[in-house]
Image 1: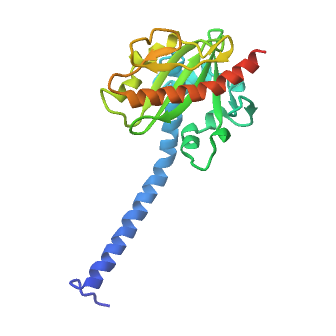
Image 2: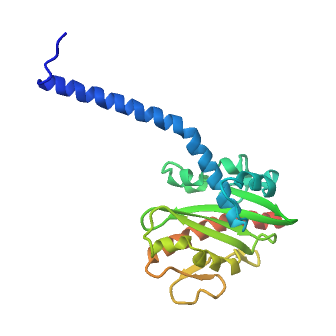
Image 3: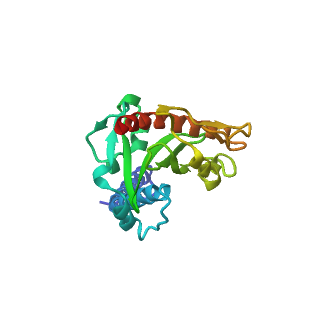
Length: 237
């Protein structure tokens, strides 16, 4: 059968075939790379947890250090009431749950990681929220008293460089190291302020020019910590 390469039908059929072939090729590449992407995501998650614990690591040694310090049998998943529920902490995708419009907030899961560092217990709480331009997330660790903040690392996807993106700097995160997450066992909000009073208890200084992102951090931190304070209060009894 001979085709008229100058006809409209030939051009139309050629375009369809090209789209199908390219689409199939891209899908095959995506499927082929997914195991690598998943492995990279796993390593990145372990690095973030270790960094919140003050443990320096690289992609090469993150898995080994994670296995060394994280006490898997003490890692738990809790619900919005601070109660332990079934599940693996590491398998919980809090960003996916946060984005799921069909999942009520009260149905979200809250993973808690426990670590043993030279005989001292540490706890790591992941959290996710909204910045000005996209998602923000953090890992905050606690000392063995289950109340004093040991480390805090914040991340963002698309905040403005020099403004909201400054939440990912140690200058911002380190402010939380002097904070506690409750007052005599009762949850108390940590305010992100812009009046220079961030050195006071339960306050940290916000990012200049990044008010909305700073408030996003405040909302994320307090919404999440409230759940963990409930769990820790029960655990201490």
